[in-house]
Amino acid sequence: MRTLPASVAPVLVGTSLGAVDAHFRPLVFAAALVGAIFIQVGTNLSNDYSDARRGADTEDRLGPVRVTAGGLVPPRQVLFATWISFGVAVAVGIYLVVVAGWELLLVGGASILAGVLYTGGPRPYGYEGLGELFVFLFFGLVAVTGSYFVQTKDLTWEAFALAVPVGLLATAILVVNNVRDLETDRRAGKRTLAVKLGPMRARRLYAALVLCAFALAPLPWALGSLSGWLLLSWAALPLVPPLVRTVAQRTDGPALNAALARTGLLQLAFCVLLSAGVLLSD
Image (cartoon, rainbow, N blue to C red):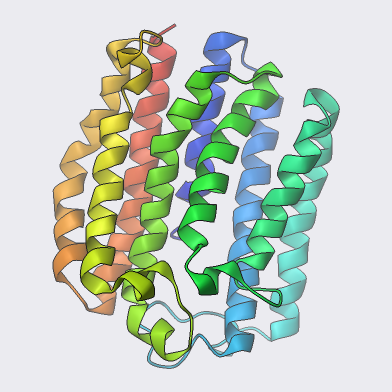
């Protein structure tokens, strides 16, 4: 549940831009938020189930105990909860298709498929170092522009520009997760990007993702579109140095687990402030 901000944050940003460019539709916003949350929950449960079946979650894992590998919940119940979560997302998605258009069928289907295939299926892309790319795409570009589209039935370059920093911070959440699990993933044959890069470069990647997100937040203002209120997102900058130091210097599970949770909160704070900046640009 430490990663749930990654599902909420992009909906806030996309909806705020939609409210500025068109008008705010509360029911559509609520549906988009519920759909995003349940896709995230379903993805987490699917990964828990698939990692346990592949033997990736061993006893020496530094992260919190996962329900399937830890024997806390029978695998069949985890799988059932996975499909219930995706089922809720599909039900909400049907409403969004009706009010916003058939294009949402493609978005929702691709999002669920990406969630399942991260660690599931015959060739899970999360085991080949592609997890960060898909997180950037689906928890950044797709989530923000999709949330904008359901409000406006349109797409603009500003939606894509705002999606980039959101996606970078979502990717940073996964990077710190994979830095924490680097050694156990390596032994399990899970070749995440952190495993491929090695600990030092993976930690530098985390810092680069976070700093680039803040650097790119004012881009629409710099290009003459939205106002300087986008700099309001920089009010979250004081949260960054302690996080970067922790990820750069610490190797113990508790410290990196805390950094994972705080990175999720950083993304949420950043996106709340960015959304406020967008609304004040109106």
